[in-house]
Image 1 (cartoon, rainbow, N blue to C red):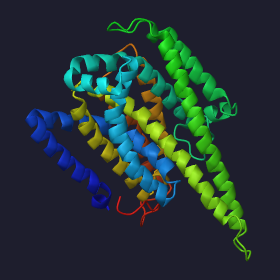
Image 2: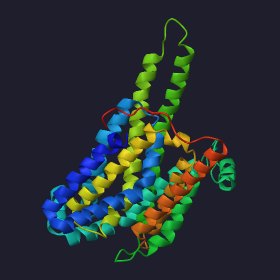
Image 3: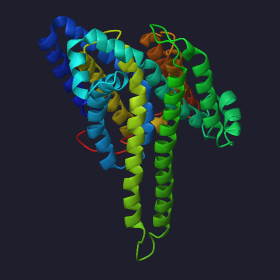
Image 4: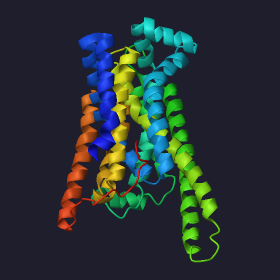
Length: 375
């Protein structure tokens, strides 16, 4: 099971490290290895969130996420995204931006760093909305009941998440964004615009995927009710609707992954400004996050350890706040990674204690969710 799930990650790691050694020597190999560990540490909570969404998708779309999705994650976010950011902020053409990234790495790094306030505002508000919508929803299982019970009552106001996100964005723009270091100056307008863009992106993509998911559940219920009848009308419609629901959930997953990758990409510049080393190292780490997502889905871990999703969402909330703070203040990636690992670790321990108290071993006799074979 372990080798089947993580086999591709192990193979890519060996190939990637060998390639790094050939191209850049022992120093390059070490840098790529460090970047891989960095990506895994800051994106561990991403795997838990991905698994929670991925388990709702059928085998075909799970395979799409784990094949096409990894190409988008590795090449799109870890290689193309930094170049696009430079092209937009510096008003350069794509070829000029690539040339700058290869031949003038110091200037390239400076341009990416100058774009950090916009990136952090977009990603921070997007992730904050994920956390707020989770914490304001009334759930059967409550990890930190003293927080989650009153929050669930407050969540009856549908627009509360949006209101809080906008207030946080406004406070951020009026405080940390007014004096960005390293020649940034006043970035209030940039932060406001980018934060609103992040909020709109969340509402559009999340709203559409939620709409189709609800429609799919209604169609499945109707199909189940009609199953005893000679003619099973509605089955075909349900299948078609499942495709739409899965497509938008796939888009939602990719936007989440992009938001999670912001801190890793920006943090990687503290280690190297070579975009190819960066893409290789962060790409290896992203492979492990995908494999961990598959592992969580196949083992039914989220059903067995019911507080894991809580811990991951609290980690998302912490990451959102950290991203917004980094607009002005530098925070080590070690801190970012440890916050997520500690919160998820505590939620896992709480789940184990709960299972023992209720006489549940927290183990599964087999795969609870079938992910496309061979991936």
